Each structure stands twice: as C-alpha cells, then as structure tokens.
Image 1 (cartoon, rainbow, N blue to C red):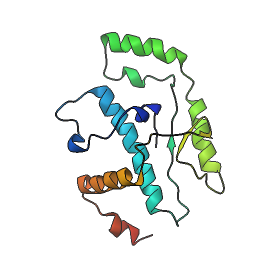
Image 2 (cartoon, one colour):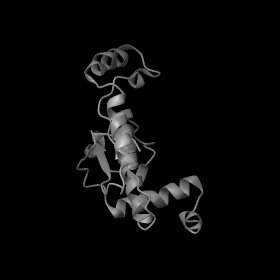
Image 3 (cartoon, rainbow, N blue to C red):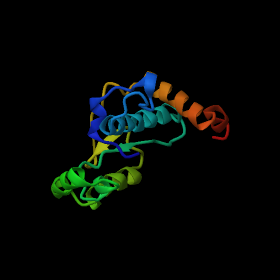
Image 4 (tube, rainbow, N blue to C red):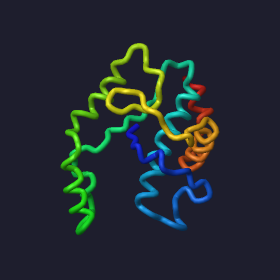
Length: 150
C-alpha cells in the first residue's frame, strides 16, 4: 500500500470514520494513510504463517500531477511550486522493487527509501482489528470465509 508520513499526525475518527460531520480534505487524507498502515498490520497479523507480507511504502514528495487533479486557483499554484522539490517517480519505485525482491521477506511494515521507518503509535493490533472488522462490514465480506481457502 502507499502511505505517507502524514499518518503520524492523526487518530482514527472511530465515531465518524467517513468524516460526515466535519469533513476536511487534509484530515481525510491523513486518516486514509493511517487506514492503509492499519490494514497492512491487520493483514500481517492474519497471514502470519502463510509467507505473505503486506507493506506500506511512503514515496515522499514525488514530481507528479496528483495534487493538480480537479483543483484550481491557489491549490494548483501551491502544488506546482511544491512538486518542484519532489523526486521522480522512479525513486519511490525502487522501494517497491526492494520489497518485492527480498527473499526472505522483510519483517517490517512501513518503508521509505528502501529503509524500514518508524510509524505512529496508533498502529496497534487493537486498532488494526477494529479497522479490519469495519472494512469487512462496509464491504459485506467475511475474512473467515476467505481464510478457509488459504
């Protein structure tokens, strides 16, 4: 999964996960990145004996147009200036490649620039389980049925 250091600056809004009461794009972004790392943790907790590992890669600031999608005015201008300081997409791609080529698999969870990095204290098995249960409910699926096929 693709992550961001922004996951460190937020807690899950468990009482309003969809942020319906107080939506803010930056809060939604940060929470989505926290969800990515919680989901990876939840997968790893469940797939312990399978040899399958889930990871979160933080690409850092990358020179792409992602910040210009459906934006305009000042947001467009800020992103145009900000992305000049980013790296080419090939740089974070090396971290994905690094993790895919590791045999045996790397034991970590969160990586940036081919190195394991620390992550938020919010990334716990308890929070990962809570998100996993919520995800199953929202998607109408059951991990137990999937687990039987492994």
